[in-house]
Image (cartoon, rainbow, N blue to C red):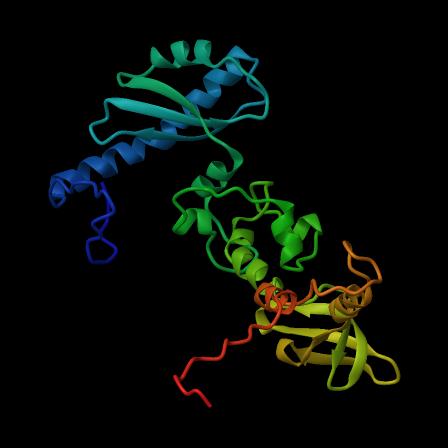
Amino acid sequence: MGQVMGFTERDPAIEYRTILRPATPRDLALRQEWEAKQPEALLICQERANAMGGFDAVKFVGALYNYEGTMLTFLYSTEEKVDISRLQREVGRLFAAKVDFRQIGPRDVAKLLGGFGACGIERCCSTFLTDFSPVSIKMAKAQGISLNPSEITGMCGRLRCCLVYEYEQYVEARKHLPKRNKRVGTPFGEGRVVDVFPLKDMVSVFIEEQGVKIVAREDLVPLDELKALAKKAAEPCDKHGDGDCDCGKPKGQRRADKQPPRHSAPQDTGDND
């Protein structure tokens, strides 16, 4: 059972699921009835696991009945390898519905529990995220975020999902900006890059006797690259050494220089003079 949240145009490239029918008052009553039984079912499962022993490393997160009440699924999380089959057989005798156990990861646990994130609003995983993209520490570094675990780790104990949101924009913006400690030319003089602001398309440059200046990308001159090009241009040719060389000329001009000039033959006009 779902809830209509809005309307959108149909995309031919997307395969949509079929809506069977609008929910009736009976449907809503059945859902409320089975949802009310879920906390009790979870408590029974936890008590049975404690009585049997051997499940101290398992955290039982939720119990979910299907729409008709014929299937009862227990969600659990664990960092260790645990044989859950004997508990499944024991709990299956206590319920009329078919019992199943499903292991979920730390991010799914946080999604079920809900709550608020460090930003002050409800967690993304509990509101709009439908799947979890891989998150790496490299994404935090690219965005200049402090690597303090308390600032980049979510309630699930994993890296925060929001580190993915602006990562591609930062990577694309950094491609056009110099890295830190690069020597650059600015309208204020030559200096060294001390910090980069990718989304502003600017860098901060330390200039002797003037301090730190904020400079836009279009006002920067890449001194290191220009020096490298000038050094390369001053070096002798790899093929001819210090001798005469026209390797730097276009191919068409080289051929023209090597061929002798063409002279047109005098034409016979028929005059005897």
